Image: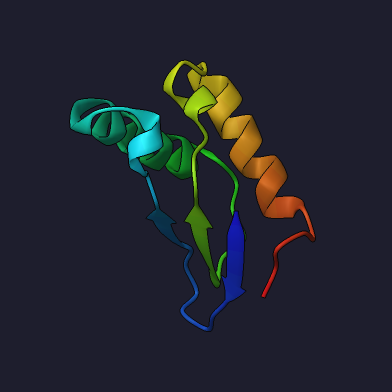
Length: 80
């Protein structure tokens, strides 16, 4: 996950789902699930997030996606 501080007052999410996740149907399903998980997660306001899912995201449980997003958002790694 890549994060960037902004002054907007609300988080924005970008999802990069490449062909390594599967066909178009699979990629779109993963993006929908990640958008829903990000909405359920507690994210820092005033931050933009870019999420690059791995192939494991295609079979992950929803609660695991929410947890992974929250942990990545709190991590100091890849913060610009």
